[in-house]
Image (cartoon, rainbow, N blue to C red; front, top):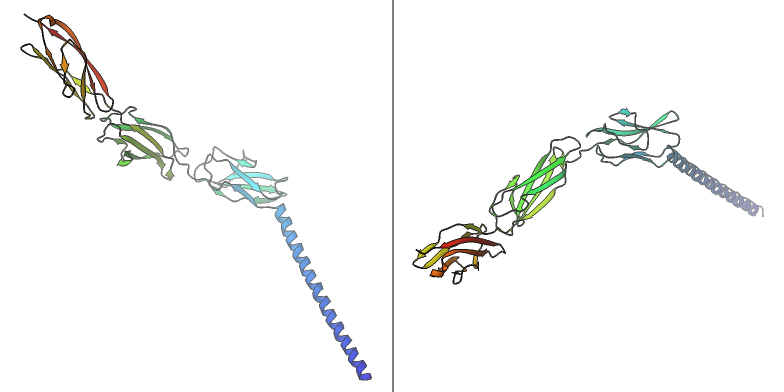
Length: 304
């Protein structure tokens, strides 16, 4: 009986020891969780109070307004100072910064002063501002097949860099030249395009494209002298076309009996005695692209 009582007592002791172990483990885990929670809250609290100080955008130019942001409460009661190349800019103290003193390559940062402590932002470097074309014109405004094309260009560079230009000429979308001008064989209806790109030593600006369509040229008239063969009057209308278009001739006005060959422009007329005197004549010359020219002249018929 006694042995049995001892065994029960031993079992009770073991159970008590196990229970003590379990309680101690739970207590340590709870303490660990509490410490972690306090640590996270402390970090969050400090982050809220002294949040990241950042200025943006990341690639400012001399014309950019730079802004300051922070996700904490550090701005409350803080003084904001701006620095160019680590030299304080006395005229700027707010959240936004711009200055006529900025130059390409300068560095900019913001420094907050609060309760005797200073907090610096990231530092930005002012990048190049590419040149910008402000005036562009493709000349001539009404080009013909024998025209030489040129470009009038004006651009500005806020960094005061030297401006150069790249040219790309195409005729009917086929590359033609990279010169500042275009002098090539053209025909009526051709599409001439030039793309001009401004650039400085650090980068290229936006290109401009200009296009002109080569206009049809009117036929050109040259004077000639009439010829008499007995009583037959002949006059060859001399006309050429700069575009090498096929020409057609039509007699718009003339004395009775006068005719013209529509293909060659040869006028013929069987003159009669009653035709003595002055006669006004008009010939229309047209090309196959809609060009039309009226040629007026006067002829005199005299009989002895």
